[in-house]
Amino acid sequence: MEITLTTPALLFPAISLLLLAYTNRFMALANLIRSLKSRYASTQSHLVYGQIKNLRIRLGLIRNMQAFGIASMFGCVFCMFILFAGYTTVGKYTFGLSLLLLMISLALALREIQISVRALELELNDLAESSGKK
Image (cartoon, rainbow, N blue to C red; front, side, top):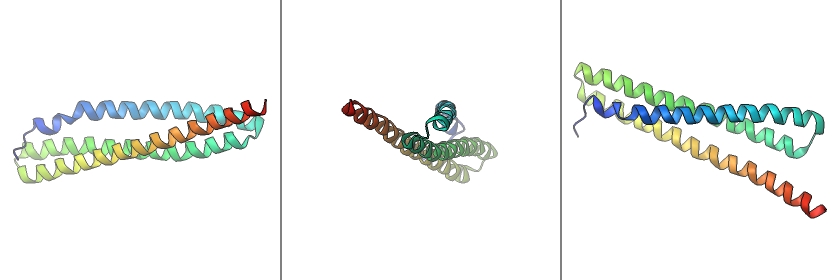
């Protein structure tokens, strides 16, 4: 396989947009945590506490998603530097590592989405239970 400087550069827009999406998820989560914390302080609800525990897990996943995404971008830049220096074989391996880091970041994103859906299911179940009591 022939690899040039433009090959790792093709990932820049994708990784940048991915990191922006991760940051948006982080900001939304931070706001949700703040609102649930005050809600829990006033209600001591087991549902709210369960949501907060869920958010702690999701926060760790988002941190790791961002870390692997940043490492992937760093790997792409490093790969470009290596290719510029003329070390094609090392550049191929570095690019492969960057792709692997990006795949790990995406796998973590998938897991975070699954946990997010589970949290929404808790809310829907609580709504169904409270509707059934009325």
